[in-house]
Image 1 (cartoon, rainbow, N blue to C red):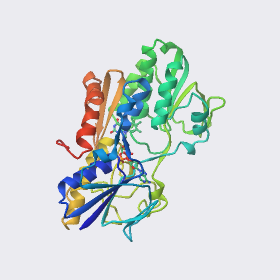
Image 2: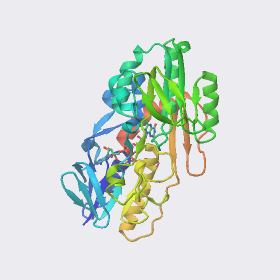
Image 3: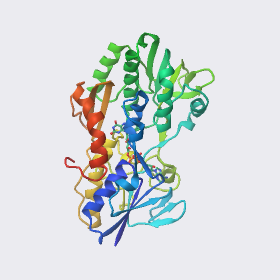
Length: 387
Ligand SMILES: Cc1cc2nc3c(=O)[nH]c(=O)nc-3n(C[C@H](O)[C@H](O)[C@H](O)COP(=O)(O)OP(=O)(O)OC[C@H]3O[C@@H](n4cnc5c(N)ncnc54)[C@H](O)[C@@H]3O)c2cc1C
């Protein structure tokens, strides 16, 4: 019997493992999924929790409750992969595989920016919201903030959900307006590139919204260090920006188990796969999806969801020595929440933008009231009626 090992029980890994278990007979393949955590978090809630727009108690599920009976869960840390020997090293043991799915996501690394962690731990004004704990510390500190400069920063690494810092900025601006302190707050987002969002026509629509609402973009600003004692962010370009409340996006990289202790990333940060088939370029029994893969799409749960279908079809075809016919087209989607009650969905693939750049209440309701339930009860469990 073949052994399929899935690394990571996040969005990509959980969906893939559950869909594999639905498609394959238990006598054909054993499916094992490994994660160092027993809890799966709904990460898109992390920019909503600070404002009280979602309930912290409802953002986690025990991984074992969302996996199908046919999937074995191993609670351990992956420390390396040897694709020649077809083994995965865990902190306790080794695991042999016939086929491997790598979906270990992004590694958040605030410690690579001097002063960021110290500012977070030692002051009340630095809150890296990509971490659940950072979102929660911000939730506590925000009501006390009554004016000054509010800064969101984007690092110069690849990040998951490139829209999240923009949503954080716009929701904060709206929150200050609702609290009646907007005139006392300067709202700024820094970014290393020269545009607030990479994809047209959403970029132009966002620029219009930011100009209307007086939100400032500090472009070509690459955060180098945080002088948390004086409340100043310094940039590689030689500029500095004072802050009173600072919400950085932590720098992000590939997982060290793959980058330092496997050849799967070929010296880079991400697992090198064909951008359409998601099969490894050197080791055909390895597939990768989600944030861990080097496909040039916007890293989002929406992308991982689409990729899970491609991995399912191509991996099972490969197991039967059949041609791989499924192709990932670069699809990603990002609901851009522009203010409480309004959102615009940016949806695009490798080639084209798909949705219209329109703000609507329906988009907000879909994102806040409908999608979380679809995420937990359908997608993660491997039911996806509209793949
Ligand atoms: C603030 C924020 C907002 C977001 N908003 C959106 C949004 O609105 N829409 C959207 O589509 N996406 C959004 N995303 C992005 C989305 O959450 C990710 O793109 C998605 O989770 C990627 O799935 P994944 O399976 O690749 O990685 P993950 O879901 O991150 O899962 C990786 C798993 O690997 C495990 N792991 C890591 N290293 C090891 C190891 N060495 N050993 C064992 N286990 C390990 C982790 O514990 C984790 O369970 C957002 C993310 C954040 C942080």
